[in-house]
Amino acid sequence: MKFLHLLSTEASQDITFHCLSDPPFSPTNTYSSDDPGQEYQTRPPRFRGWNGQMFEADTLLEPHMLLDECRIQDGSWHQSRFFFHTQDSYELPIIDIQEQPLSQSNDLRHLEVGPVCFL
Image 1 (tube, rainbow, N blue to C red):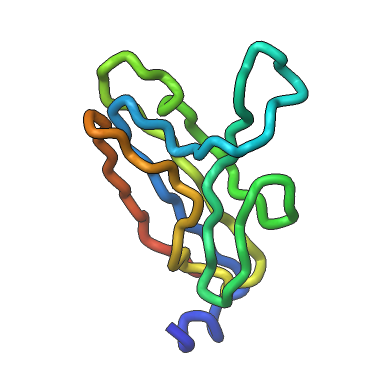
Image 2 (image 1 turned 90 degrees about the horizontal axis):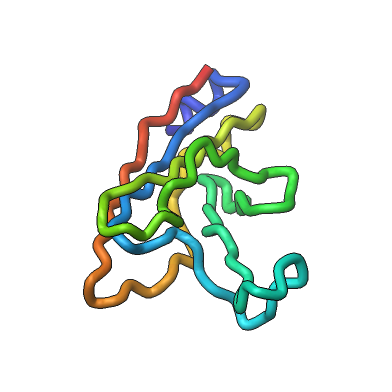
């Protein structure tokens, strides 16, 4: 891995959550300020990169959400896809995913971690 990092100036990777009645977001203990009808805010998962940096919402290392269908809970399989691109190749691959919600007994989830492309 160190050799790939040394030869590369940037890297990219995608991660896909496949879900059946299970969004990839966890509820927080605070009420939403934007929508009073929504009881809880939702927080996207946080991703830890190879060098320990965290990819999370509202930061410089925010992952791009390419697809967000897991919020649809209609009994069918859906996907939420996150894309990571960085000018610092030492930040990828993603090695840990944090703050995923606890699954209910009827929820099914599958995680697909894509390959890292070093450029």
